[in-house]
Length: 386
Length: 131
Image (cartoon, rainbow over all chains, first blue to last red; front, top):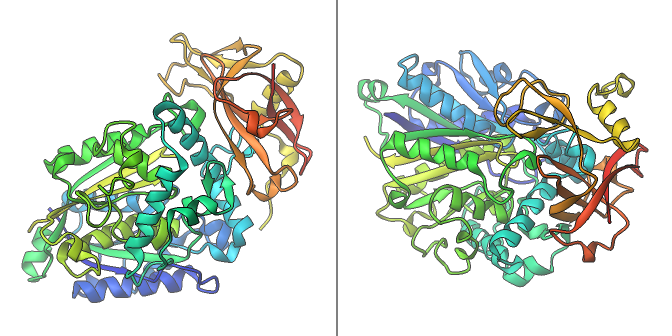
């Protein structure tokens, strides 16, 4: 098994003056402090980042971030848009399982707010097909709005259903000190907010965020030899892919790449959707959470639109979704999101997260991290297992 | 940070735009009936390398749409605008809907493709008009 020995996050939010290297230094410091293992044991850094070349004029971030983390080891940057650190996690899991390493630092960072809203909107748009989508005026919210309208047309649903997703995730973030928005909202707040790209409004959308996250992963051998306390493990990994441009997909209201990633991860872990007790899913927009829940097999297509409204996915529901606040309220520094989801799940399952009381006996969690309009998808099963 | 040299053009895309502008729109078709857009050497659905140019149907139906209020900067003067994905059978295109009240747009509506000028930059823009 791949053991999670430590996790660390910066606060997510608006810190335009902070460099990516400084944020990642903080997150990795926190992860090694949590792990209680010497950072010099790390044999490589697997690091996710999306727009550093645009936001910081900084390519080749791997070695820079290894320095920031104080590890003397080679480093590689992974880029799959908003799923960049999800990709890093998957490759780290594979490396550890192959026996090619025993301790790895995995993480991600993104500096976005220094670009301003215009600049960040432009930078996010490059995750779409430049020739055939961006040149037609497709923005990142616009792409998910196209999916939302296709969903409404295919299955039904309303802006009010989506608003309940935002309300729920803001509620979950109230006590999360890492969250960008620790602020309660109601359905009317969402419905009355300015439109970004119809039917999605300001409160259907995750914020533009700065932040970093890091996790320390180890082999069973390392954990045994060094007598490390690591009660939570990554037991399943899966990846799915799809055509880059939304118009090239058969279904505009589904995300089959995430279905493929989930199937692979479930098989790998030997669990099914019914075993999953809590999940962190990629809710960059409210509709994205709905699509995720259906892709993961928690709901049939067309059924997840009412899940938050019915209370099934709230903190007191049958299967709490995004107890961290999700991308929606915790924030979405895109390259940091994949490992941040694993960090939050780890703490939720260990019992040292501010929202752990919502899932006191849970042993099986799941992380769903998506890039673009889900042309890239990574799913990881995280379990209390030693 | 310098931008790419726009005068270099986008081979494959530029010719496609010019063709649609001349009323001779096309798409790439593989023997299995999948459509795709250039430049491309392999079908993105079945990997076939036998791609031939087929005439783009004169009309298609709106598969989904959105009215975008917050644009990227290179569309600042165009906003608000309606983006639609339009279904032409074996191929779908993404473009902007002109000549129509955004409130009157419906999925399933019949439209014809054309090339117009992007207001902000003067670049060619794939667009659709109601028929």
